[in-house]
Length: 251
Image (cartoon, rainbow, N blue to C red; front, side, top):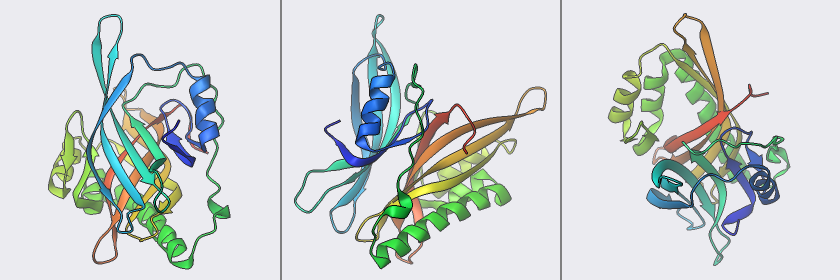
């Protein structure tokens, strides 16, 4: 809890995402703790030009009892700090993490419309949200592989199974290998942009559709956290993307 900002958005599998440190505390209290103490190692990250926003992503490991087996997970964290202050997490997603058990958590959305933003930041927030929405539209029209390859930064990545997939050619090859039987659509519901307008994140809901052995459509629902970098030409490309499932269809 000491690392979380008061306005943190937290994504854990099995429940809707929650907003605010008090809501995260309630989520932790309402769910059974994951087995084993977590240890994590950042793999990559970057800091905004104004040195007040940043992101990291990496690998988490848990040594579970009673057989001392190692369970590997991944994570994405977005950090912010006041000038001269401590770094705090404002968005966090557990990827491949444990599913919340024993909790009925009410979804708490960020007060998006109530934030007081300067005009440049507000314009950037609208721009990155629009980019995320167009990204989803492209996935529907051109397919998942083409959409992700066109929107990932040259050094951006997605979490593969199990490897990290880096850069447009590798991302295109990875998703193309999954076939065309699945579809993916999503919608951003919250975005935040660094004061220097070069780093951002979006959070939203997704729906993944595939075909079962009988040919019937199977839908899975979830939520995601995407980290975005502003390119030299002013466009936005993502640096890392990941999320986890929820038990019900997004409202």
